[in-house]
Image (cartoon, rainbow, N blue to C red; front, side, top):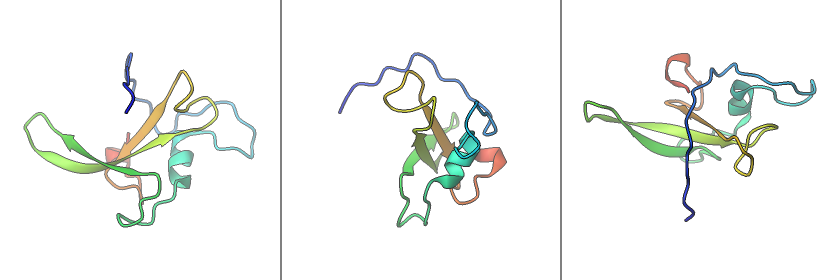
Length: 95
């Protein structure tokens, strides 16, 4: 396993977009919707994570690292989408 140094974390809206050709994905929301989700038995690239809150309670969430145009694992900026439900990507619990 490699060490991961995170200089900072910035939350962006799902609608955050960048310049792109019309035929390519151009927002986090579009990229998350394109990720294959067939349920917990076949989550595709989504990874189950446990989110622990300040009060000590925890909840299962799902995370997906995107590799799209300006963002990716081998690029200076990375993006991870986290949600309680990859099938519907609810506004109040998708970051």
